[in-house]
Image (cartoon, rainbow, N blue to C red; front, top):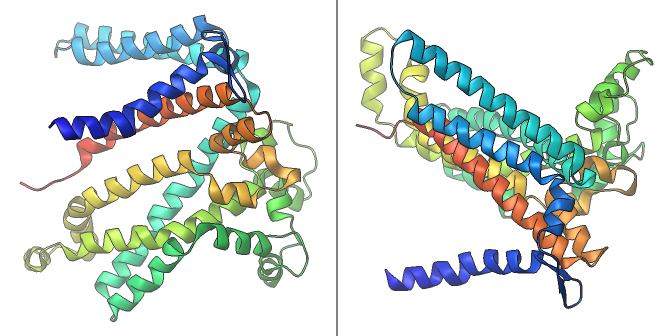
Length: 358
């Protein structure tokens, strides 16, 4: 027990504690004056909004766990309190976004776009590939290796290749493929406008609200998402294929005897039994998208940086461009708390739907 605690302290708690220590000072090349929570105020804005957001979530959690009972009036009271605490938390979050560092929250918005676009497509494609390998195809070992190659290939090398593929040149591979389907030459990684505004322009709709570009991911970010899917579907496919292979065949035989269709067998047998694998890859994917850095930093372009720079890239720029180690440490701790919170919520929400057997 003691060695495990030592390892946890040295490699886990100490870096977090030291980052917090750095964030409380002016720290560029060397440590400067103690400034307390000045950097947190710069990043998150008015502390009252932060307190409102945190207390709103805390009271919401308390209502969910402590206000129990099945009587009608208790359920009405609980729903009312839940709504009130969520409204308070939402108001606090809006205040934080409005008064905090605009570049930080733009980076969080881009990161959220990145996760929402990449994870569902990545998991869905992996699910289809794994199911096809499990049901129909031979030479499964060969295809396991083939699908896994993008994941084990150095990311820096493949990101450079995809930067060339998604260049705005008319003869780039992406534009050649798009041209075969009748699409015009596009900027891809150099295009900061949203995919929705580009689609509207393709339909000769030139008048649309200005918030369209801010409310949807850019073409540059979609290009990065396509690269992310290409890299990680092999890893997810191998994990899901292992889940499919662990299902006892007699379950399907019994279902067939009872007259179950293939769709019913998939819903009532396959999905519950591979839910641990689905939960695992979903959890890793969420954490991975919020920690993504290498390929995004390589694939970002001068004209579209604000539309692809995720939080980790914003932190890196604080170190390299601004030489502000204290503010970078502050942003790192904020990102750590966000990832921790998302992991907790995902575990609470999705973890209940995972079937681990009898």
